[in-house]
Image 1 (tube, rainbow, N blue to C red):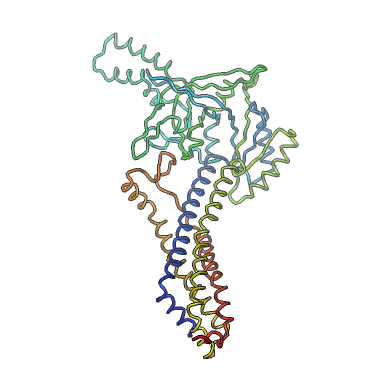
Image 2: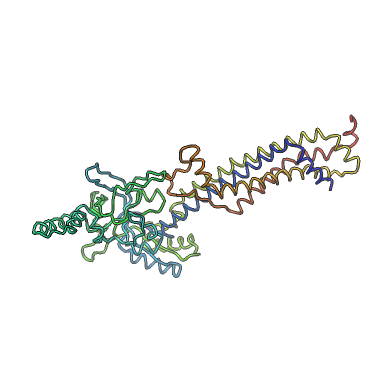
Length: 475
């Protein structure tokens, strides 16, 4: 019992120990906050990446793709069996988007043009969940240029105004026919879905985004064509919606167009049967299936169809460098932040060494009264454990509270500093994402306790080895 009483007395009276407690508290709290925010960002990013990409992708090593995609899909179904839920043939190619802005200078952007059948693409991922109109309402996966979209063109708006005019004259009828012909010229029959960041300027700070490509507006796409000598093709499309995944990499580059129209425009459609080529097959897999194992099986099957032509990858392998970079950043931050707790450990070591020197007489008396070597050693080990427990306990509570109210804290700091701490013009998040992982919290607290106890081992052994007579010789 005397060991615990002495530990508690030292904790209450040795105020210098508060420095070590504060160091441990700050280290534990900081590591919990940083890990929770990093885990939240990583989790949000993984969800969005997986929503954009299918579980598995079979792709050719050539942009021109392969004509026998129906045979490839049948082979995938044969090998995958019940694990394969849905498939979507896709044509993906780099290109350039040109947006005319009505009197203002036109804008050109490098883009990734993706030809899909929207209903099929919606079955293999979260494509449909990311489609919106200009008011932010969800729209169905479709490239259809409806009458409502045609009415949004300049000629369509003039035609609507004309039809609302109560006067009925011959001039009005002739003007209506002319406006209808102009509307048809202004609105191409093929629709396109633009990445949200392509079609807007994101101002941030609570301000509304500015659209530079409205729904119903005509845009031009240029792309490489299939030919013996490289050539450039072009076609006009009507904006029918926006793709908003929240991932800048995709929202600022992706343009979705009808698969058959892209095949025709790129000269990848046979005149005999109208069949075109694709360079990807997106695959949705049953939940719980082993993606890596299935990818390996499909790779072997594709090699039998055409050696060294097909490549099969999972969505994680497709985004491997990005996911690995986030994991490396998190590991490096953990190592750097753990030094804060290590500094607290050296503080405990210094404080305990000083206490052993100051309490030489007390240690001698304790041993003369019958205190065992293990008992004296446990006094200092218990004191170190108590310091670590108090510091890590307060740090854990403070860190979890900070994570719980991090968005409110961010708003308060933004007001004080007069600028946004978390800039939503960089990330399409309206709140700072966080994810508290219990095993990470336990590991951080256990690490802090280990350092606190480990730092007290040497002073404890030094005190335990003291001989009572030598300790009291000069007292």
